[in-house]
Amino acid sequence: MKTKYFIFLLSGLIFLLLGSRVYAQSSSVDVSKFNDLQKIGYKVIDVRTPTEYAIEHISGAMNINFLEPDFALHLDKLDKQANYILYDKAGTRSTKAAKIMLDKGFINVYYLEGGLDAWKEENRPVEKNQNE
Image: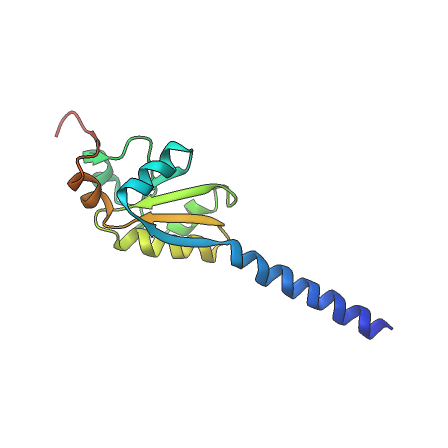
């Protein structure tokens, strides 16, 4: 009897752990979809360096530098249940950052295919430093 209970409990735990990863997602989105997600309240994270961010960035984006050694520690301060869209210059860092976020238990993470370069190619607005 105890063995059946233990197996049932263990099976349930495994199902919960594996099942939670089914809902976690990370995929690229194009500029239009990125813009739509931003409009419905997804949190935008610019994973470029603070210098790059200061020159220009997408309005409303917070900056968390992917190249910083304690990048993962900064992620720990974020709500893992919230929805995020990431971008960088061309899409490489944001792809890697999204993977790290999923590995840390974040549920819904997208990244901008082509990065800020793609955003600007479609003449989307950016905030610029007035000194540049």
